Each structure stands twice: as C-alpha cells, then as structure tokens.
Length: 330
Image (cartoon, rainbow, N blue to C red):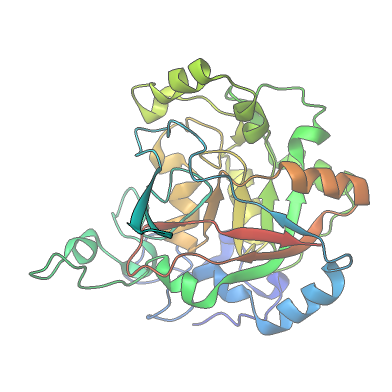
C-alpha cells in the first residue's frame, strides 16, 4: 500500500485506522515506498504549491524566520555554541569558518534525530547500526533518511500560523509547563479564520522567543547552565492522545514552533513525547526555535495567517537535522 501524495486527508487513514506494517512499530505510517526519505513532505506536491502561490502570495513581503546562529546564546541543552572565525587570506581578501551545532538555533529535526523508543527503529526502518557505520576514513556509509535529502528538494508549501501566545492574551509564562491543548489550537484557528488543508505546514507561536529575547545575559547563562534536558520547563502543545490525533489526522506536512522543544517540556517520558510519534512513526519533520515575532505582527496587521513557506535545509549527507534557512512570503 502506498499513499497518493495528492490525496486529500479525508481519503487517507486516520491514526485509529492505520493498518499494521510487518516489521514496523504499531502506529507507523511508512507508506511512501521503501526508499522514501521525505515522509510527510511528500504531501508538498507541485499542484499544492501552485495553489498556495496563487492564494497566499499577495503583497510580496518576505519575512525571515531564522534566528541568528548565536541565539540562544549560550546554547541550551549542553549543545555547542556557534563560533565565527574570520580568516585574513591576504591584504584585502578574507575567508571565514563557521562552527555550529545545527540544532542550537532555528532548526529542523530530521528523521535520524530520534528512534521509536520501544523498537529503536527510525523512520522507514532505519537502524542505529546503519547510522553508526562508517568507512575507513570515518565517512558515513549510508546517508539514508538524513535531512540532507530535504535540502535537495527544499521544503516549500502553505504555512499556517496559530498565534497561540497572542490568542491567549499572553496569559501564561512561556518558561513554565503550561499545556496548549487541542481545544486551544482549534479555538485559535477558528478565531483567525483558518481552515486547515492537507499538506499544510503548521506553525505554533508559543511565545518562547519573545520571552527569551527579554532575558539579560545572566539569565541566559543561568538557563544554559541547567544540568539536564529535563530540568528545563517550557510551555507548548501537550502530548495527549487528542493532540496526537490532531497532528496525524490533519496530514500536516511538517510542524513548527518558536519553542526550543516544539512541545510542552518536559514530557512524561520520551516514549510519550510527540517527537516519538512524529519523527519515527509518521516521518513528519519538526521545526524548532523559528523566529515568529515579525511574522505574527504582520499576520495580525493583515488579518491573514497563511503564507508561502520556503526553507532550504543544508545538503549534508546523512545529517541529523539542519539550520532552518526559512522565509515566509505573503
């Protein structure tokens, strides 16, 4: 069985209807072919792109959605902070070197980022053994299911912004475990006049970037010094069965947040996290730490919350993730 990428969500199986795939974890939706590396991004078809351009590009305004590479700074979760070295090659000629962890700023989580916690399988049957295999020079033997495959095609489609932080009246602290529920998402979408379409790229503004940018140097350093990932507390969408159904059954091509973990953090466990469903089971890319501040301002002013999203992931063989390199075009 293979999915038709141009099919409407109403013609595709709901999460409760997914058939069992031999050799795959329960709830897997590996229906794009044995060599597939794009998962839900297959929904970003030429037909949908042409429709999106006609419907969403009205003013030609271009908005950057990527934070500077050194924000957050220092990097969180013990990741390496971005370093920029300028090299003088000769009088009047300069070169440079970037050193960065692609997941330390605006980023895509790729399919190699997280395996299914119980079976240890990554999307489409990729294993840790395959990822770990290197040749005599230390190069990866197999790039399969790396985010570099997305760089060859780009991620371009209809972005839909749910400005949850504004909708809530900024009534919660983004640095607490405040849950954003499915009912909240649906109420916000209704208030903004949004009707979801198959293949949408869902954007959720939780207010994380706004709060982080208000911190002084000492507060940022204190945040970066937290000893473990589960010592952080952040508002985000909750990992309830209702939310899992919402994310699956709408057949979003990808989901994005301004939050560093995408979902409310910490989860009850990694096995119960949204990451454990979206990446290994559905092949649904996760965008984190996108800068949605200017986009949300423009959307509120124009009273429209859909746009053309264009992202160019780095073409790196077998990459775990990628800098976002994303813009919105309205």
